[in-house]
Length: 546
Image (tube, rainbow, N blue to C red; front, side):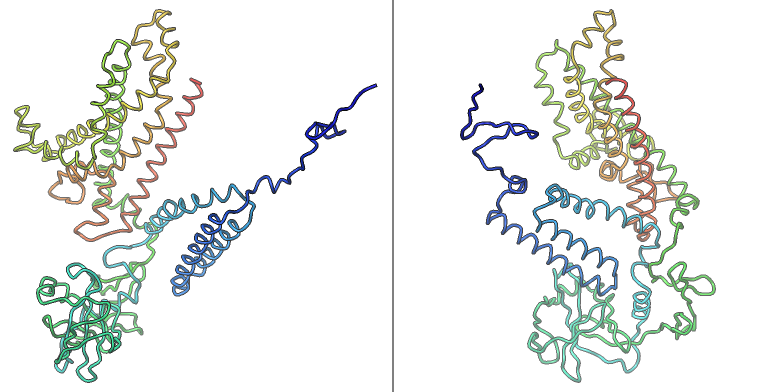
């Protein structure tokens, strides 16, 4: 005879289902997984979703105006997906993953894709806008004052800072006394209640605009002279600081021949869609063109144009030497110091470690400027301290040695820190075992310590190589890429590809964003390939020593 004990909270055996605790109601899976929504959480959710909706509405209008229907569809689908995700109690992991994914797309994927797309265009100075923009700029730029040109009272104003803000013309029509605001987009009439006009037509105040006084306008006289306001009959240009005239365009566009004709010289420039410019029969191009797709032309120029390919491949070789040297030398010095301080016979190691990481704690841009002055030929500390007369930044190899020395000083503390951490993670039993087997300290280091050290810090060495391959500050703040050969001021002896690309994109000869984007694609491909090969070898090394 068996006795069955049961009561509140006791366990009962249910056939086929295991023990079940009685006396407490079972909660559903939904009730267990979803906590009740608090008022604060509800308010935060409403505010954030409202912000998402506002951003979507704000972004939709430019897409509709530009007739970018694919972009509009992506925007609507993304917005609807976010609302569905955060208004439903399901898909909990997605609620945490989606924000990071969107930021990754916005700040990493999209810039890379935009750069790649730019590499296949002629985007740059003279080729920034559309063909219509180019036609307007050509016609407006050729405006000249002719007999009988209408004169207008002129007031110069801006919506920003008087010294740097974009300028506008406040024009008073002498016939109707109406006031219009003009910029590169054209004229827009202002409401009479928003302006104050003095006798003679001079505007003294306008809502939303800052009127430039005589001194401010004089300081920006070139900007005022260069400003051209398109009109239906030609364009408005300034005549001094207080008058403007409506002139006639000497060059006009003829849609029939798709060309620009100069009424004074009779010359004609025909549109060439392959290069995005108006070209004359003798090959002469008008400076103002438009953005077009040029296919692989930029990549071909990098590889085949002697004026570009020569500096490119020379810079590439030095780029590899700089990245490998910066990474290798800093690693060897940092590891050597870490090994010395790792010895149990060393005293005061904490004090030494604090001193050794000081270069790492200093702002690198400030230290680079200090080192630049220290390498000065006439009054620099290096020459004065050692009694040298070396023109460090005037010769190719001395400049390269100088930047590598600066990188060594700035980079070894980082390698010292990571090597110190890796050494402390290596079990002492392994090195003690080699000593018992009769190995010398060097043999123990080569057979045990170094391989395990490399397994631990190889990913950091790869990251350091990638960083130094594109270390813009190290070059630009010390040598600015120099010294430059007399026949090529665009590629210097210490230039990296990143500084060379910067000079192409923003150089004094005119920006070539398409070409610079193509060079950036080469840089990305090189770094990605080297990193992939290095990580593959690192994984094999980990398998050997794991």
